[in-house]
Length: 258
Ligand code: V07
Image 1 (cartoon, helix red, strand yellow):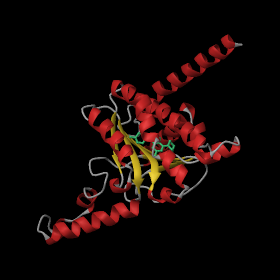
Image 2 (cartoon, protein in one colour; image 1 turned 180 degrees about the vertical axis):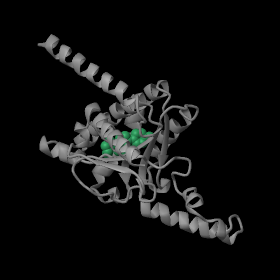
Image 3 (tube, protein in one colour; image 1 turned 90 degrees about the vertical axis):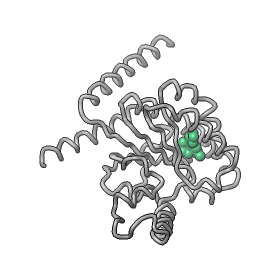
Image 4 (cartoon, protein in one colour; image 1 turned 180 degrees about the horizontal axis):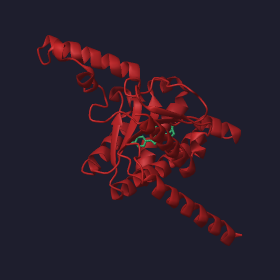
């Protein structure tokens, strides 16, 4: 029985490896953004508490990061906590705010080894000290890495991000730091939390909801969208490759037209 399982796993792994090789023969999306939805739904289906779904979802983050790195993707942005998530029950919010520490405690050495650079975007002032400390320590320890940028959206909301950008631009115009006539899309982008990142090429949202939920509204203007009914904890290597293969099919079609 054990042998049988092992044999199957090996065959599956080969399948993944072959697909990765094929995918890398064509342009790969350079920035993938993911709305990791369906952790609560995953738990409910198994009569488990919602936090069990969040914990399982954390393991998926590691798995997908590893694969995305293997594909040669430059940036992976993950929506980990939205500004709306504060409305959830207190115990759930407290559990969620412990996940970055747990994740980094388990995986930071591996991320360093894999040359991954950890970053975050979001409003820092409301994030608990213990959470922010762990994330900032990881950012520091990986700041010299030049492989995949693993960008966590933590206490992130896109409208607030845009509003802050507008206020800072007004202030900089008033103070003569920039000229109003020089304000264009490129300059505006530099006032967003993604100032140093390119726009996503591919957005994935799991768990069947077909909306953006205040995620990267400016940055997703030209992005390809991939929606799947799979809940985030069930989202495996196979699902990510399926999304990237679909992206490449679309690019090929577009390439043929232009
Ligand atoms: C969270 C697990 C994934 C599914 C979505 C909700 C729950 C990883 C992190 C994380 C964040 C920053 C960081 C390292 C890891 C995380 C939250 C929730 C709040 F530097 N997963 N994960 N943070 N979930």
